[in-house]
Length: 372
Image 1 (spheres, helix red, strand yellow):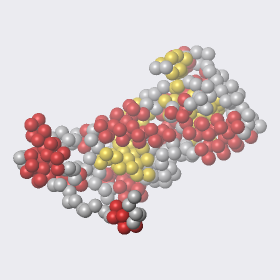
Image 2 (cartoon, one colour):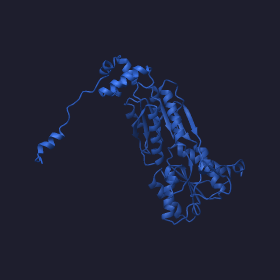
Image 3 (cartoon, one colour):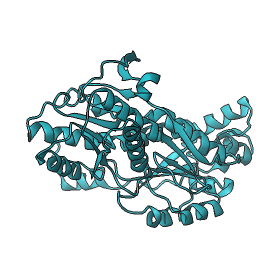
Image 4 (cartoon, one colour):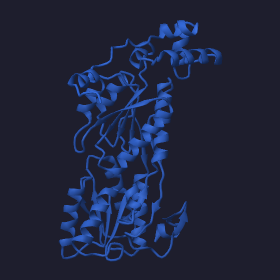
């Protein structure tokens, strides 16, 4: 056996000799084509013959060539990078949205640069930083955008789409679920289940999503002559929602129905109701969420919730951005995607209106129920 030598270890750890990156000119010489032909082969959508493409790709593979995206962006003026601003990924709905956006954009040969703007703070400071990057477009997931920044993005030609949030600015497009109609549907569902003492657990008052859900819920209850819902704040977090639920259930007169502005708060409310107060959620207390996240269907919760079709929302947002990046006018204004009330075990069932759609139990309000 060869004796152990410390020099052998250091010899193995020595870095390999630096190798200069292969250039497009070298690929062009090897393939016998022009430099512009090489550029077209590695530019999505560019026109190039089958024979030329085959020769360039063969030469690139042989030489180990990788196109420099930064250099390409300087030539074309496009980075093929889309900035995505999200208020953290603790909420499973945001994580699902970002995952779907990344996949959909990748299919269009775009890449995502992720930025985090925490809940309860304006996105403007981080947007000031974002505008220093060479981005082709910007998607704001549940993040605020002031009119000033919206106008500034417009001035520099940066297309912006808000997803799961909207703004009053006419220069910005938004894609949301049907928040008002969905919340009104939840109100009708709870009324049909003979509930009488209602609570709305809000997210943030600055959130258009939470405001629209509150408005739809409240309007439906008032139309039916019911007592307006008590409003509490859950701030879209487990901690605050748990604290709010605890205070509600300590009261002498408890609510019999809590509509939470998202699933995360609804599941926190269920945990408190069951583990701290021993309540049978779905019989003694009904709790309904909004989003229909993956965890909502788990055996631990079986949460009744209004679904937001993530795939449709993402398809809408990506289509709007790609059109804008390709020189078409940005489709501004709100784009609303409908959903369904998915019924599971966390709320008392009404006698009518239930059906099976795509393997799920859903509730649909009839014309008679809407005027009762």
